[in-house]
Amino acid sequence: MPEFRGAAHDARVTSRIGRWLGIAFGLCFVTGLLSHGIQHPPAWFSWPTRPVNLFRVNQGVHVISGIVSIPLLVAKLWTVYPKLFAKPAIRSLPHALERVSILALLAAAFFQLATGLFNVAQNYPWGFYFVTAHYAVAWIAVGTLLLHIAVKLPIIRESLSTPVGLQQEAAAGLSRRAFLRSTGLAAGAAALATAGATVPGLQGVSFLGWRSTRGPQGLPVNRTATAAGVGRITDAWRLEVTGPGGSRRLSLAELTALPQTTAELPIACVEGWSQSATWTGVRITDLIGSVGAGPQAAVRVESLEQGGAYRVSELPAAHARDPLTLLALRLNGEELDLDHGYPCRIIAPSRPGVLQTKWVGRLVVTG
Ligand code: HEM
Ligand SMILES: Nc1nc2c(c(=O)[nH]1)N[C@H]1C(S)=C(S)[C@@H](COP(=O)(O)O)O[C@H]1N2
Ligand SMILES: [Mo]
Image 1 (cartoon, helix red, strand yellow):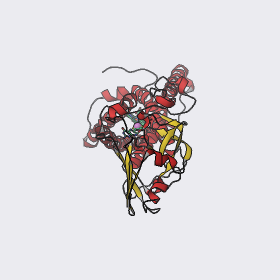
Image 2 (tube, rainbow, N blue to C red; image 1 turned 135 degrees about the vertical axis):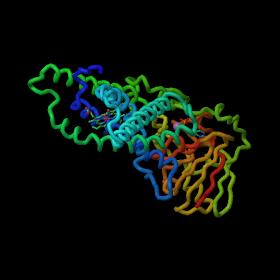
Image 3 (cartoon, helix red, strand yellow; image 1 turned 120 degrees about the vertical axis):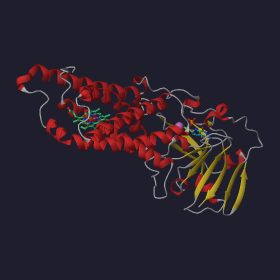
Image 4 (cartoon, rainbow, N blue to C red; image 1 turned 120 degrees about the horizontal axis):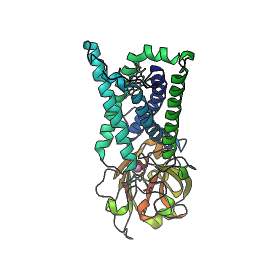
């Protein structure tokens, strides 16, 4: 039987780190559920259009709390790993079930943090499978986490009410505090390493802020026109708008001649970066109003892109009628770059980047 004498292998340390980990994991779960709900809304779900940065904050909290959970999880496991070798390995049926739930929690926690990190670092490495798997495993992680906390609650209560260092064991108390301080520092460093991708002003300090500075017109691009198979747009291009009152076809010159709205709005990519820009374009509510849509109308947006998971998006009624939901023609005072969606793209307040459809060809009023 190996001996584990490290001062940090102590329930007082475990519970304190566990508390931080629980907060970070909980924030990550709630913001992840919201993000999933916005992208795949069940009938009862609705997401507000204001404040314009609401989704951006949700996304930022999700990514930062997920990254912060990584050092916290490693530190937490360091404090408890001797317990995994405790003998006898199985004492009873309930004990065996609890061991299995710990295994499931470990696997689920690692899976979530690893796939999340890869998704922030790379670009859609798993396509839609990632979304489905990350969402499903989130429930396993949280279910087994709640069970774990319930099982350990007596130890958590007791150890949180006991000081980290007792007088008769001064040296061990010191190294326990040092372990907690280093864990806190590592968690803070992890937050700073990634926050710049989404928090304005932190770009300079965040080496994990991969995408925040690249792209034409000062804004990152997730999928270029070439990657999406969108070729040169000719003068023959028309936007088709279809509603209960009929169909219209508008040229770029005709769209430009309509009343324009300018707004500062963010692109908040679920893959971890966000950035504000100044957009100018035609209100969607004006466009669909001209084909007979009322305030309860939702809109299906179709891109010129032929394949691709992000070819089509839906604007729910609250977003379709919002005066800041635009069919953008200009970005930061210039005509849109082809990579940002020329001739026109959707830009709406408080939405995930993935729903800000580029290279729009058709708007169809639904419902
Ligand atoms: C999020 C992922 C988490 C994972 C993967 C995890 C994993 C583990 C593992 C493997 C053990 C050893 C279990 C054993 O052999 O009995 C353990 C123990 C423990 N965990 Fe967690 N845990 C997590 C979150 C939490 C949270 C949020 C708390 C809340 C404070 C917590 C509190 C504890 C406590 C008090 C113990 C027992 C420590 C002892 O007996 O000395 N854990 N955890
Ligand atoms: N048609 C289409 N629109 C799209 C995409 C796409 O792949 N195809 N990517 C989306 C994603 S994931 C993001 S984050 C934003 C990024 O906009 P930008 O490239 O102009 O910064 O565009 C969105 N619009
Ligand atoms: Mo995105």
